[in-house]
Amino acid sequence: MERSLGALLLLGTLALPETWAGSHSLRYFASAVTRPGGEPRVLVVGYVDDQLFSSFDSNSSSQRVEPRAAWMEGVEKEDPGYWERETRNVRVTAQSYRESMENVPGYFNQSASDVHTFQRMQGCEVSPELTFQRGFLQYAYYGQDYIALDTETYTWTAVVPQAVNTKRKWEAERPAEKWKGLLEEECVLWVKKYLEMGKETLMRTDPPSTRVTRHTAPHGEVTLRCRAHDFYPKEISLTWLRDGEEQPQDTEFIETRPAGDGTFQKWAAVEVTSGQEGRYTCRVQHEGLPEPLTLQWEPQSSLTWLIVGAIAAGLLLTAVIVGVGIWKRKHSGRKEGDYVPAAGNDSAQGSDISLTAKA
Image (cartoon, rainbow, N blue to C red; front, side, top):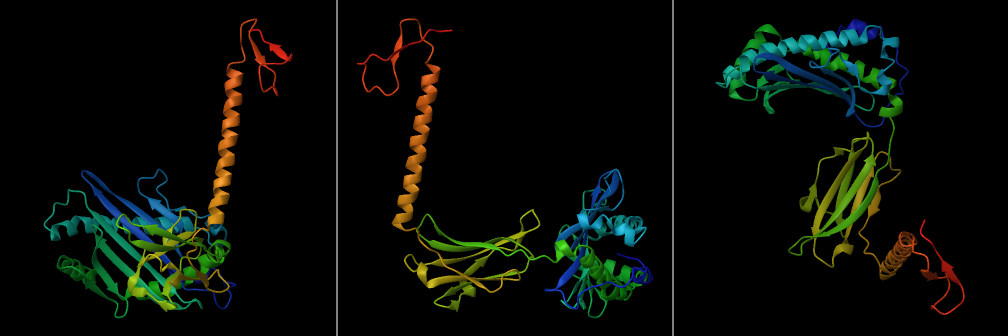
């Protein structure tokens, strides 16, 4: 992401609408893992609105940043040298990680020759009008917050005592103010660029598929679960109400999760008293819905069970008939003189006798 602002301006004027529904973000996640006796492995991935679009792996044979979204394949036509520049920036980042991994373990009284993990997340969020909302630059060590850039004052904040040494070093070598233009201007320009390039994917709205299910725990506790899946973008609201009143304190959520196919899934659960299920409703709000959905658990009626039973009985009968047919075919080869009643005879009496000889 570190490139001159002038190069971005040369990309041309973007034919963007005045507003784009919902806020948007550009994020880069980088990880460096040290290996005893070898160079750290560095991985960098780029996301626009939670959609992967580029990646780099120092273990790959290409040693280059590569596209991970179909809409990124044509970026070189509008911005010649894009992938070379991205690769160069990542290599600079990788070198800074190598330097950090030589120093940071010592701050924790650890050996630099052991296996360690250092991570960085940087990027920005923009409003529906595509104006800057906030920027972020955060570092973690072993997955725990280590040092971060305060984007209000553009100063480094040591999250743990060991990071004070890094804070002093960075304040002397790399002033935090340099990030202001990168996060508030350059990052915003790239959000606009990527949204225009991938608008058919990034700007689509897939409404959620929803349902309410009932679950009984071993000790009799009853839970209603409101599920939503196959939706995009990620932002969604699931709210449980009892007699029309929201129940935020009694609701259990899982974080919105990627489904692996470019869509997302989420559920919200609430414990209820058995027999009181009808007092609860789930309200679902999402950009892809023309209006909020209101869902309620509906117990299956006796008629439904009769239909299900009839279908099951029909399938069982079909399986029996097929099984008998297979058994007959397996036993169709007989010695001369053996016989079987012709189809349609209910007894051995009758003149339709079929003689079958073994081949």
